[in-house]
Length: 165
Image (tube, rainbow, N blue to C red; front, side, top):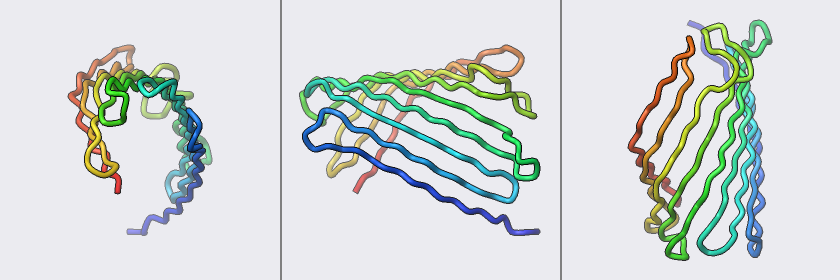
């Protein structure tokens, strides 16, 4: 069996002004392999209006190429818009609401069609833990466009620990 050769590289930049009510970040990533390669571009921003309200936004482009043909096998874009509500006026507790849509840019050999792919909607809370870590708990609803025109809805109890040190 031949070993798989992979090369990966990335670049990211963040703009986090100490006195500004906003922040922004951008990320580029390239992964090269013997079977497929991928490109990822991600931009994100948030604007804080006051101690109790912030708007969040993120956009992502993803492309996967077949190395043998050089052709893209999958391309997609996604976008997220959300609200962070801080009823306590601090980061100790945040109420979160967001919607994230996904659009496939091309048809695939395995049957996925271009166009609307899925919509994720989340309602929950983020709680600060000791240090810089947080716990995000809530309800995630996924509306998924399946092949053949069928749609599936997933109801998810979501619990995520963001460990930061």
